[in-house]
Image 1 (cartoon, rainbow, N blue to C red):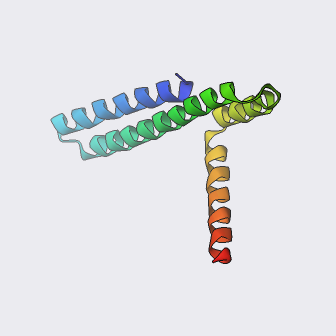
Image 2: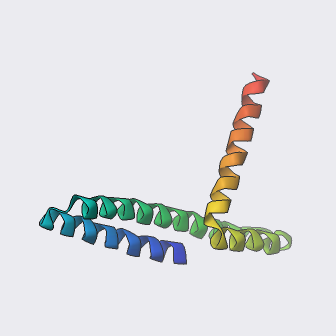
Length: 102
């Protein structure tokens, strides 16, 4: 289990507690903060699951590619927002190239 998954689950739990306490006290700001933290936690957990899945794929890769693949995974663990931005940018470029061919 990656650090992102652990942090995500902790953030989600904190959000649920905030939301519940906000419901109990009638504090709408605390409820909103709780909902936001729940969503942040779910996103971090999902990202961690992706990293876990990629880690198992790297283990199955040929020996000569494992080193570079591990470097990429280490970068993704350290810089999740940058990694997400890179992947989103590649998706936009690839979808634009796919539309041109038709």
